[in-house]
Image (tube, rainbow, N blue to C red):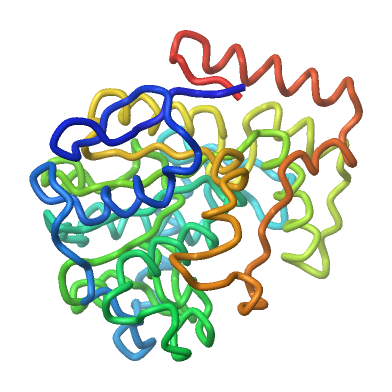
Length: 330
């Protein structure tokens, strides 16, 4: 099923109505380059950030802070580690700490571009695409020395809340030149308030919920040698809204409704539609995907080989009910 999506209107502004999948790369490019509603400025200063630029956190203080806050939050077992419900979102203990640090210490800039996804919704793919688009002048695809050929997208686009190589990014992000290309798994409700207040642009990529679950289940089987999740049990938890950064439907609906309210600031994209666009799925900003072995494009409809008809129907009904009235469907 199709959803309404943004496309280019008068004066190259973004508006919400039906659009052709072939326009995805152009839409993303214009959203990243957009300044005051026009496509003009490049983001050539968005270059790889060295790990040395990341600031170490005080682990003792962080753990102490964890204990104080986590003791007040609902706790649930069932994943590779306990999750805590922080402001309506299920998070690992360390992520709770990271997000609280962001709320108090992160300083957004008006020209920041934030790539937002629910986990296992094409995060690496979106980072690669956005990085290639943002740096197409500095790193032409045909140069043979494109950073995406040698460096993982996770190392090219820093995460707001996820520690990188055991260090926290807040101070390191402050050292990056503007405009910054950043990423997050946080729901809209947990983003530092300055991101909205300063008009920072956001690109959100969603994915068919059944494929999200299957991809998440595969990930959980790899995340810990001591954790072997049962699919049926994990599926029931997912249907209850219990997953990392979940519930999924709250996450998706928050960004969708904001994209309807602010179409020039929040760009809402659908993974399935982008994968159906040969111009996007075959090439990353002109860079052939097959040249980069770390791109693992998730299959659209892979859930059909893992979920029973009853399971699929159950999740469909839950998602439909949770998104009712929003105008968003899958």
